[in-house]
Length: 336
Image 1 (tube, rainbow, N blue to C red):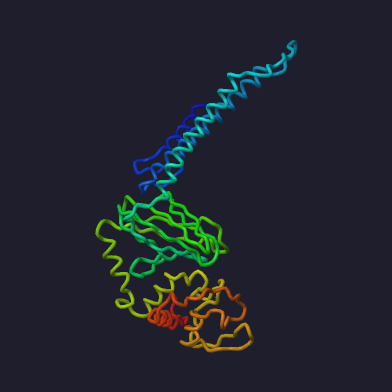
Image 2 (image 1 turned 180 degrees about the vertical axis):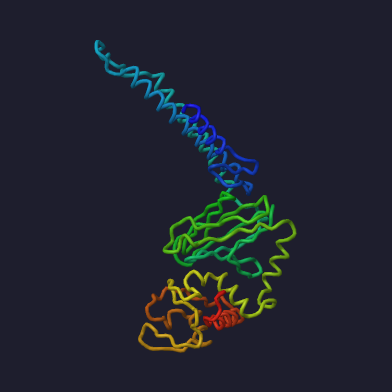
């Protein structure tokens, strides 16, 4: 039994040790320039906590056994003051706290100060999706970045507090409505990594997931040029589907008839829609355009007026592509 317990403990300890890529039981792989420093400080604090926990528990057990009440033994008066002991138990924690502060503050400064040559991308949080705008105006629902190049994110929120969190990069920053937050990182390994919202922001908070795609050297620029011209290279229906996903429309509107925050778009085009004011309207091109630009003007009955406006955020060709996509949702295709 003892050998089995020791073997299990050894397995847990071995699992907690970092692998070659920096991953461990506690942490994902280290894929940014600041990840190693963050992990070092985490492990340092964890080691201190474990050491003093074991020290206190072991000492407590020894004292309970050694100084327990026994027949024929009377309690002795305990000393009221021990200067040496008080200096020790004050000095050691003070030194440890100072060390933690120094390394923590240095890490904070490194993570807060982006290099002057950083590539800037605008990030926006909205219930319940992320969108990333590149310098040429292209918007994507995933964050694409080049490897080995510093990236600065300038972030805002359309509605409530969100928190952009990339575990593999050890980057986490709150995104607050009415102000801009900033964060930066430099990815060190090409690949695809998870991006979460780490601040509870409503019903579909757990669905607010994106990906960070780190491109190898020389491939990011090619991807950005090709992605930016999708309206010219894709069929209108396909371009509309892409916009529907990129702009986060699928978070509130389904295309399979299921209910969400907003009405389903399956088979909507060309049919009568009952509105909250008791009137009806045909869901044609003009109605869809107005619903995108003035979502509070004609709210569908049974739904709250919570959709944000896309005025100034979608161009006319993009709106036309979305309308073409809605036209294709006639309910006869099960692949939507």
